[in-house]
Image 1: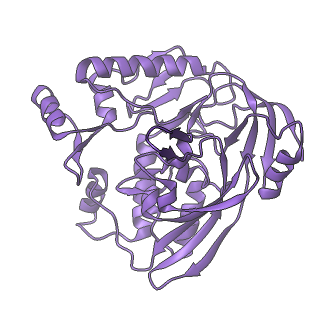
Image 2: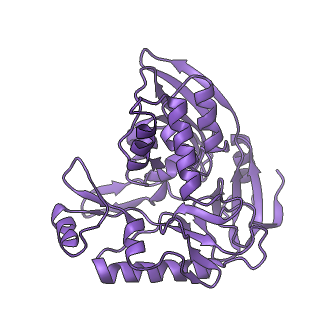
Length: 357
C-alpha cells in the first residue's frame, strides 16, 4: 500500500479548485481497502472517498485519508429474457462506459451521456438527465464497508434512491423513543462495481424540448439509441462548459419540487416560469430559470462566476492549472448569494447538488 503525501487536487476535482490531500491512497480493488484497514495508522483515521471529483466543492486542504477510486473493468455479466446485465468498475469514466455499452449493442443509458464523473459515484448521486435516472437502469452494486472491510451487495430498494439522492448520502440515525432506525452509508462505504439492466426491447426516452427540436430536424423520425446519444452530446456541449477547459461541476443546484398551489402562485407573478408536472401532482421548477430571473447570469464573486450560457452552472474563471483559480470560499459565497436572492423573490430555497468539503 502506497500512501502519497501532500497530493495536489486541482487536477482531481472538476472545479479545478486549488487544494491538497494530506494523504491519499489509490484503490484498484477491495484488497487495497483491506490493506488500509489493516494498518494501525489508518484503520481508525477519517476517510474520504474520491471518484472523478465532479460533484465536490473543496473549501480547503483535506485532512481525512483520501481513497481515490480506480477500480476498473467492464463486462457483460449475464442475459435475462428482458435485459443485458452489464457491470463496470467504480473507477471507470461514466461517459466512456455509456459509449461502450452502445458500441456493444446494449442501449439504455444514452440519455445519461456526457455526465461527468465515475461509475462508482453515479449511484451515490442517482444521476439523471433528459428523462432518465440511474435508478431506472440500475440492477445492483458491490461496495466495501470502510469500518469492517466486509464486501456487500445492494439492490435498488436498498440503495433508497431519490432525486439526486441515495443511502450513500445519509448517515445512520436512530430514534429509540420511536423504535426506529434509519440506515445510512455516508462516509461508510466505497462502491467497487455497479451493474445495470439494459433492456433488450429498447424504446427511446424523449419529451424534452431540446430533443423535440432535433426530431423536427429529421421530420419526426424516431431516433436510434446512437442518434439520441449523439444529440444529447451535442446539446450538452452547446449548453455546458467542458470541465477540462472551464472548471465546473455541472448543475450546481437541484431543480426544486413544489406543490400545485405553490407553482400556481409563482406563475401568477411570473407567467414565464419554466416548470414540469410530475406524476404525483407536484411540479419541478427549472432552477436555472429562477436564477436567471434574478439576474445572476454572467455575474461573479471573485473568480467564481455564473456561466453565461446556463445560469444553473457555476464556473471557475481561473485557469484549470490552478493559476488565478477560484477558491472554494468564493464559490460558496456566490452560491449563498444566489440562494438568498431566489428565496427573497420566489420563496424557494435552492439546494446545492455538489458536496461541500
